[in-house]
Amino acid sequence: MKTGWGILGVAALAAVTLPAAGCSTACPAIGYVSGIEVIVEGDTTLIDEVQLCTDEGCSAPEPTAAPVPAPSVAVTDDWVQLPNGGFSPAPGSRVQPPTYPDTHYIGSRKEGNTWRFTVILGPAPTRITLRALAEDGSLLAEQVNDLEWTRDDPFNPCPGPVTTPPVLFLVGER
Image (cartoon, rainbow, N blue to C red; front, side):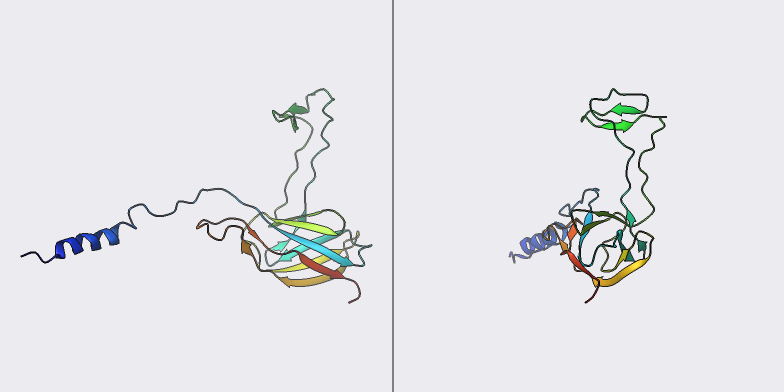
């Protein structure tokens, strides 16, 4: 007499072991960049720099490279032409490549009163303090903001880039 338990047993065993037999997701080991856009409004005439600060420290300005020769300039002992048409400091040359500061965030001024901060180390912050600095380094304004991040691809099971809406930094009289 057959009771059907054999077929049910095989089906149950397959249901338990199949997910563990290679249906997992392997995420590629690639880096991704997350950024924060800050729009400064108000009296911005004295602002020289905007910093983004968290418990990990404050942002540093984007490093600048040594001046690159014009394409019409012959390659010298200091420069090597790259396959894509650009130039790079030659090994042993007197030209120093840019050095990146030891920070979690790099900031740069974009068009007008917009600043862009790139998260280069660690997770994207959930709370930031923005600081407007004068040319002499004195503090002109400060503002604390909570950020809400959204994954660019919410259906991807692997980690990836996240975005947050632009932050409005109000400077001056409110």
